[in-house]
Length: 134
Ligand code: GTP
Ligand code: MG
Image 1 (cartoon, rainbow, N blue to C red):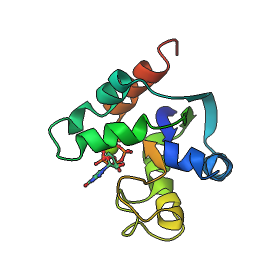
Image 2 (image 1 turned 180 degrees about the vertical axis):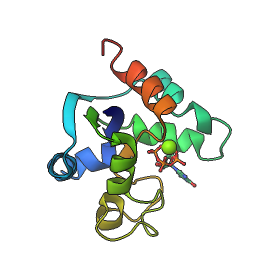
Image 3 (image 1 turned 30 degrees about the vertical axis):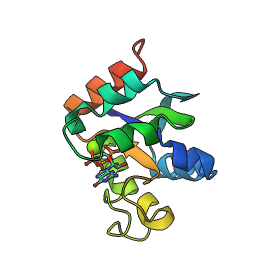
């Protein structure tokens, strides 16, 4: 079994899509291990997205992810990382397949509803950042 960090980003919370996202991951068979609604401090957001610190959109991304409450989740199951990335769909919601979370609910690349860890190394780092007691 494997664990992954999932975020329902502030746009998803504001649009009332928490139930939709949690419903889909539970229906898939992933099991919730931790869940907390919180507004990120800038420092945590900058650490979470450190790999993008040199990108032109970094400041905008940090503004967005700290701009309201998000739902942080840890889910587990066989190949949980890849399983949730498949449910989420491509980063650009216009390219994301219909039937995926981003494909069904988003239009803009930044405001794409969810985050999911992209590797076991990222998952370990991100779970440690969001839920240090796990
Ligand atoms: P995450 O699960 O959130 O990490 O998304 P991802 O792994 O599918 O994409 P990536 O790590 O490349 O980018 C992180 C986040 O930055 C994306 O989910 C978007 O919210 C945002 N983002 C990515 N590319 C762009 C861009 O070109 N412009 C803007 N404004 N935001 C972007
Ligand atoms: Mg990413």
